[in-house]
Length: 327
Image (cartoon, rainbow, N blue to C red; front, side, top):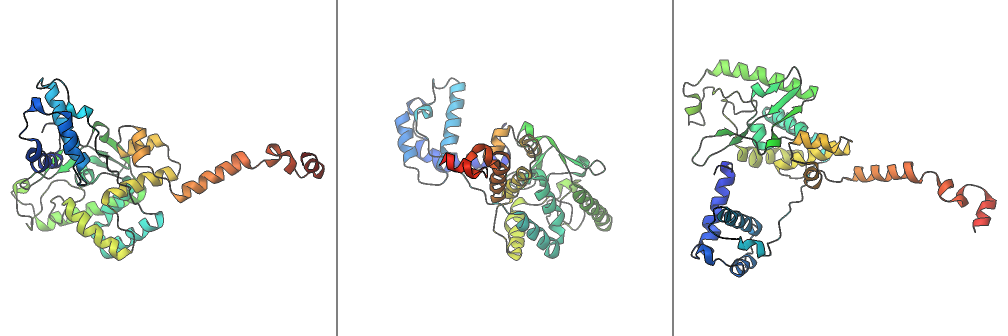
């Protein structure tokens, strides 16, 4: 519990309750043999087989650290194959179409999606962004926290995903101007609605008063957005109207990093902007080859290496006698 965010903790608890306890919970810890785990793992046919094994292995590693068992039997088990999601991300033209449709049909959401495609923040980081962490004069925002939705309702601000997630992200002038306008509209809304006396303690999602959480992107009453509603309702609706391929919200982050790589931004800068732990992870999971990259690679090879055929192949230097000699 001390190491997991609430949503991740609930997911792991569900795996233990639904999968591990019914099949393995009756076996004494000291008698849990690799062969038993291998039989169980081999019989898993669900898409979450790798995640189930990962939770079991982590639990048994903890048992080793607590001197409850001498070694982890999962170490001698062939693990299920780890699923790899192949992200689908938009081209520049498709991204522009999405933003144009968002501005036309859903202008309230335009600053949020414009900021996302321009910064590649994680969803929780974007929804937890507060004005105190945005310096519009300097054109920077500072990622300092994420938004959590504990079981039972409400919300909390927690630490970002990792130590590297604490970072500074530079903003373009277009984003700065859009956020200035958004700030002015929020101030007007706050004055018009008036402050809710309960503020953070208010459980009424439809409360007409303003709730001052200092959020950059909030509901009309100042409360934080629900990520599920944003991704499954709002984003999908705009995608349908824009006629662009359906993608996940997180794929906007993939598209942001790939666009930077395609434009020649260094891998180090992309890693720091995205809050990844190392460049290898950024390259393997977030930077994807596009047709434009392939064309650029072919052009570089042609211009830098193969353009001077007279040196590579003297017979093609234009000298007929040379052609005859080489022949």
